[in-house]
Amino acid sequence: MSVTRSIVVRDDLRPGDMEAIVAHHRRIYGEEYGVDSRFGDFVAAAVARAVERGFPGEREAIRIVELDGEQAGSIGLSDEGDGEAAIRWVVLSPEVRGNGLGRRLLRELLAFAEEHGYRRVWLETFSELRAAARLYREHGFAVTAEDTAPRWGRDEITMQRYELELADPARLSA
Image (cartoon, rainbow, N blue to C red; front, side, top):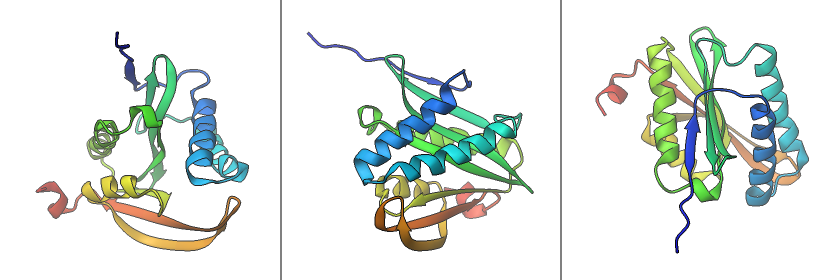
């Protein structure tokens, strides 16, 4: 007898979702990349800043992935002003990876960004997230900055900033 698991993607923010995003990042990145609690604090600070600004506003978006009613992933798009948006809080539990869900969610948020007139979308990540990097590059993002330093209890982590110009003709023809 096989058990069917239910994956639901929501585009609304409910009470407790932002706290669950922080907890999910703490757990996944701690287990998979060996970062300490300071990483979770870093994510919590970004979440707090967004909440203070009233996230999600009209030009912002969130996707919450649930597996059997429990948060199993997230991705957000925040308005950073001056025609720029940021992709934030990208995380998927291992149980929901490998089926194109991350690709679909990124594509949805980039379409949202285009529809809302953003000229540039950026994100920050670290170099060890190779599957995510492939996904970002597939969608036209390019690394625009890197910084290697001790971070979050590790001797060395290379932070990367990726950017995508939405008006890029090469991207539109892909």
